[in-house]
Length: 172
Image (cartoon, rainbow, N blue to C red):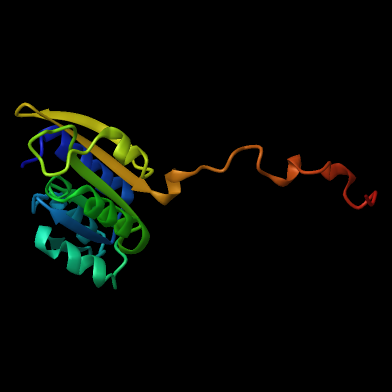
């Protein structure tokens, strides 16, 4: 599986926005995906660590989660895993392996081991970035970031709690 040009552009943009100092590529992620970003960071004197893993390394990565990566990118892996194993991988990425992650996956494809749907990813708090078509298949790019998961509502501040203008004047 290869990335469409627009999916590649979106992933490069997400990498540039995230400004990671450590990257984890899982699956069929092109080796030169972050080359422009790494070059830009090297000019600034910042070292970027890039680790790669394939489908056979997934279990080892989950068990030996010693490194917290700034960004992980998964492509071409979830289609070849059963759904419970895929969910476990995504939960490990969320909880122990990375601060944020992106998933490029085939949706509603009958030719894959596990037939993922849009609601499977939305139920795990992933946000759809874009949808792509490549060779009669539909792919979707999702991302997860704890910073964008739950925004603090405007009403949730001390100004709206129990008449703050009366604090210190009356005792209830």
